[in-house]
Image (tube, rainbow, N blue to C red):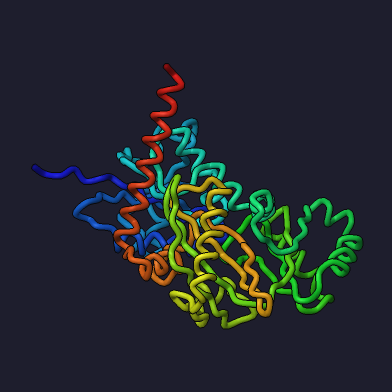
Amino acid sequence: MKRHKVRIALLFGGRSAEHEVSLISASAIYKNIDKTRYNVTSIFIDKTGHWRRVASPLLTPEKLRSGPSSSFLPWEALSLLPRRVRADIYFPVLHGPYGEDGTIQGLLEMADVPYVGAGVLASAAGMDKAVMKVLFADRNLPIVRHRVFGEVEWKKCRKAILGLIGKEFPLPFFVKPANLGSSVGISKVKNRGYTERALARAFRYDRKVIVEEGIKGREIECSVLGNDEPRASLPGEVIPYREFYDYRDKYLDGKTRLRIPADLPASVIREVQRLAVEAYLAMECSGMARLDFFLEDGTGKLYVNEINTIPGFTEISMYPKLWGVSGIPFGRLVEELIRLGLERHRRKKRCLERLAR
């Protein structure tokens, strides 16, 4: 008897500053997915937010952008795409705003279709570093000292904010947009005179900015996989080539070294894994996430830095590499994520059916 192939709709591209990273991640997933078990429909979202059905993410950017496209809004187009998409599950590989922040997840929830990864709440909270830290603190997870500033507040109280930062944060410290990933818009401030410029740079990307204490130590990352009973991979270590692991080194120069797995005592490995799972549960994640930590020199204290609900999925990305050394190769990891997405949707449907009785 011929086995039915699971139909996957791969969503990639998007409107965020991480558009190009999404193309690389989607290409890696497409190349590694088992075509004997899955039929893949590739849906490219361009930088203006228009959707286009394409042959695959492996096409050149020029070819991805060519041909008819449409908005997903029903009053702007008769259908989502020129041809109807039939999918058993949707696989969003959209890093950053308008993809990782709960927006696409909300659309898929409204359509009542299964999808891979975190739901609306976890995606939205995981994208917002300020909200994320509130949830981490509520779970009593160790986080670094930080302050959050809004754009209106910055424009009105610039001098007061600079004074507050100068008093509360020893050098060096970090200035980040609250809602962005891949280290876009982040500055490491080593000179007080650069503070205002760092804030202005971060505000170019978001209306809310977070200032964080700089921790001298090691950057540790851990991958988490699962729904209600998640499990953590072996941790890895990022050894930055520059001042910190920035966008250029992540995706262009590639001179930062990754130690996979990290050289850590067994007790520290267990604590990283425990904190990773705790943080994952605090955010009510499902499917996948990568947790980033600081391991402070001298004290040996671990700090939970942030969570990434759609982590980089390129063939050199930490998330799949950590699962590779933990016993789950890339192709099987993709299959497990699809299974988890289908499982989550089935459970939700059962709950709704019970409520309707």
